[in-house]
Length: 226
Image (tube, rainbow, N blue to C red; front, side, top):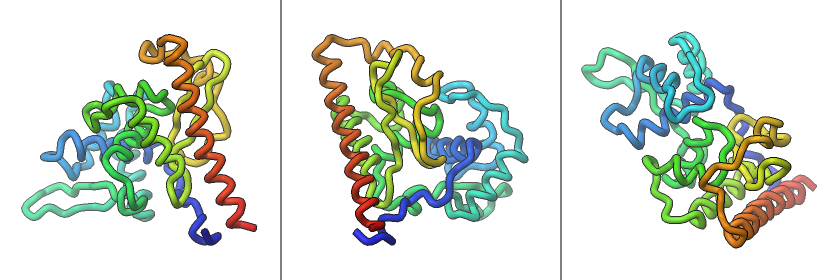
């Protein structure tokens, strides 16, 4: 792989507002296709939802519009004019910016954009309306593909640590993650992760596989720069 092709795909890092907007656009495209693309007013409402969002925010139209203008200038969002429509609408261009992403990848990225770091079990539960993953293996396989994305990792695995017995995952569309925050590490395990020792071992093996994907990607990048 050449140094040029090894350049990470995420050259423009999303702000918190932009990440929330992108997540909302992906979510509504899948769950409410009849109302997509979205008007500015609909986007403000989606961003400020109190369900399936973390943290809860209170964006006004000016905040959302400013973020949309920034995302438009970098090709993450397109403005759409509907014949006969009175309001401008917006749609995301995530698949155009990141070729090769399929619905399972988009579902996981969407939930990470909307709710921040989560475990594999939480992601499987929370993406049910977006994509039905038949088992944890399918979630872990898709996460590994996002970690090993050809043009640069899109997701990072935060290893288990004190107070957090199961690994969490975080998107990298807002930049590199140096490590988990104290709040992340001290978060109680989800009931989904309460399992037998055999299940725990299986989860740890899956975590090791994902970490190996990260290491392999870093080795490729280092080799390309030399």
